[in-house]
Length: 166
Image (cartoon, rainbow, N blue to C red):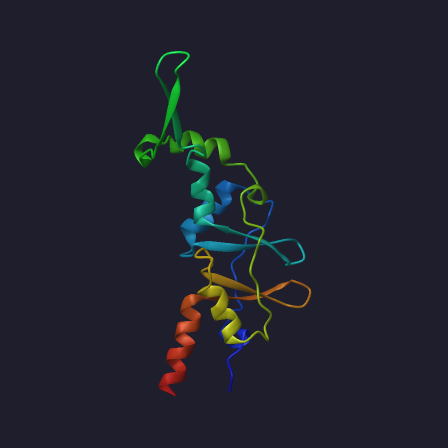
């Protein structure tokens, strides 16, 4: 018997709405031990994914390159340095206030890898161990794109373990 996404998925999925704001989603990350949530519209269609990494990006400077002119005109050259500021230097309070009411739709990833309930375990594995290291869970959607479940890496591992023990 071949495993399908239906066999692997967890049907009770915690989700967020594209209209939820950053502060609300921060609270959800604190409440649940997940590193990401599917973002669904009013019809339960998957429109994106929001991860802890997406929210952390709100607090990191976009341009970490420092340009330093050296020499005297007309012989001016520039050096560039990569600057990584430590977390202690980032004013999280100011950044949180600035971004707290920003809708998740402005922060979420919209290129979401999904599978249908009848997808093979090989299709799921291809996504979870593929070239994109950010895929840790795969939403399962019906033919209309509505969310019916989610598969995390540990769900696949658990299924293989259980099959070996049978």
